[in-house]
Length: 241
Image 1 (tube, one colour):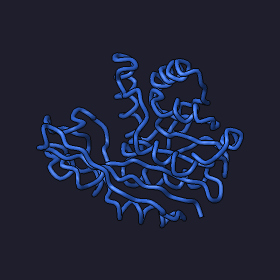
Image 2 (cartoon, rainbow, N blue to C red):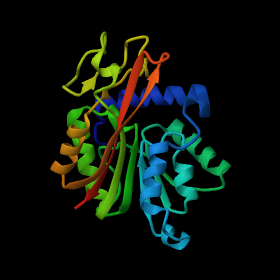
Image 3 (tube, one colour):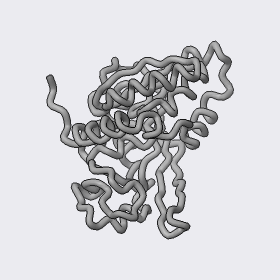
Image 4 (cartoon, rainbow, N blue to C red):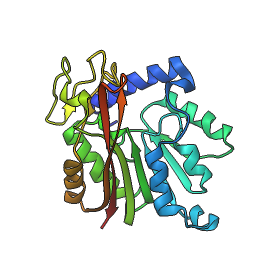
């Protein structure tokens, strides 16, 4: 068996514990708004029969808050997560909406799917748990499993976030990645595994260096503690060339 990445193990323990103790309330129940926008931009015009021909993968699918929406759209939906506890909840979530998806437990840096298999791969606040080197390995895997012209969507922490710029007592594992979020009044405090941030330009450059065109890249943010703290996300699309 291939040895797992250290951050994979740390994140797995964190999420297995959270999902086992908190159940479905450990994660939101409704899909990410930016993902909904992505699906609307690219697939809303397709007929139901055409959507059935679309094969889509969510890496880091958690308890299925995005998967049920993708499946209800009529696409062949696949979900990958490192937590077996989350996938058990995802099955319940999908069943409650009367839909299904093909679920797999595994490591997003070693996608167990054939080359050129998916029309789209989506990452909603999941691959951030990978350090810089392993994050690049993930992008290579995404490129491999996408068909020519296939789309990648990512919703990823931005370096303009106060959680990054005022991160002490967290320490840096590399120029992008904290060893967790350890400041008590920070958003996502208690996430005790690698937590990575990129700017729009850094993420665009990363995708383009691995053969993607970047047709869309924006930043969205929200405030915490009555406006005292900002947490921002890069929302980006890549198209396999």
